[in-house]
Image 1 (cartoon, rainbow, N blue to C red):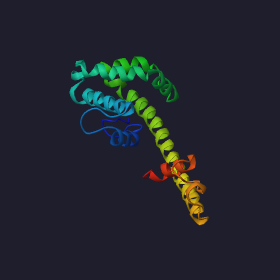
Image 2: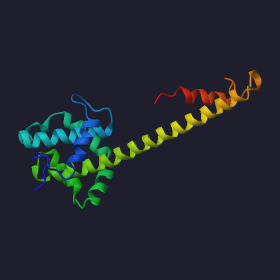
Image 3: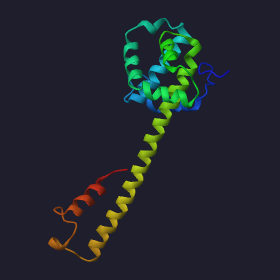
Length: 174
């Protein structure tokens, strides 16, 4: 049987990637996805390492809050994975129930990974767009220089919209 405790979880590779990319070694993660992964990992660890005895502490309030924020989407992800009664399993997970732990981690990791991939894909597309804009800006600047436009005749003076756009694009450091 697969288990994250034995490093053989259903989404083990994705879990490890998300943890590496989104969760700092100490303290809160800077993003909601990172916090979901962090809280899930910490709760899972406590269940299997300490029998869930630390789950009665205050930090669990923060975890419940972020899970509540994404509960609808997590339930939808559970349905996609054919995991039934996710809401009830999540409640049991917060109470330290090891029998539901891997199902909860499966849902959280699948959800977070899907969201993370979308953001990563959007970032890649944005970088491609900036690179294309830089090529256009370079072409416009060369065309302006080749025609020896000067002063008011230049389309690239700081006062023109094109001049401002080209300057903005050229200043982006990738």
